[in-house]
Amino acid sequence: MRLARGVSPWLLPTAATAAATALLTLRDRRWALAAVPLSALTGGMLWFFRDPDRTIGEGRILSPADGVVQSIDPWPDGRTRVAIFMNPLNVHVNRAPLAGKVTSVQHVAGGFLPAFNKDSDQNERVVWHFETALGDIEMVQIAGAVARRIVPYLSAGATVEQGERIGLIRLGSRVDIYLPEGISPAVSVGDKTVAGVTRIDHG
Image 1 (cartoon, rainbow, N blue to C red):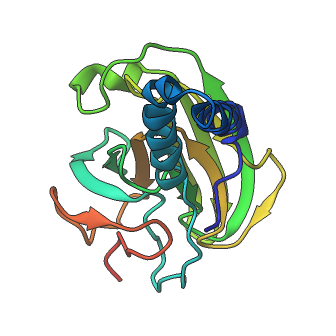
Image 2 (tube, rainbow, N blue to C red):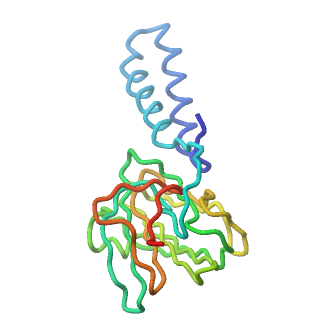
Image 3 (cartoon, rainbow, N blue to C red):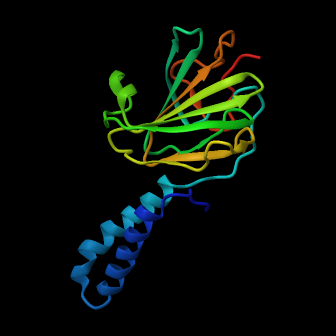
């Protein structure tokens, strides 16, 4: 099973501690009180940080995240924001919605409210801009109450293919994608999305 880049600081210490306590259990069964939950936690982290290969979908704009469409909002400048909520069981690796060039990757400090909270727009986040065939496309990775670390894989100036892995939000949260003016969403609130597969714009 492929694991996401950027998980080592969390996974390796947990797995090492689980292995050590499992060995100690061979000498004294009381260590099982620690070995069992640590082994379960390691297994859970392996699942949380999976990064499966995918056949990239077709469409001008693909979903950048696995999750559920939380809201679709018209923006004052004519764009439409599609917010995708990622729960802890979703794949946490985000993907490029279009092919193009990364023009900026900006980290913005903020809070850690639950991602479903309407005020989570002010949370810790990373704002991406892509230069694409449709013009400038903005995408925002937003940390939540549990996810307190966003790991971008790329820097400004990088060229990306549609559906390429671009970053990780540890343990879920939210990803917003802004559709350009004149492009309507092909998804509705409550729809499930798959990063790099689900088309989110009408053709």
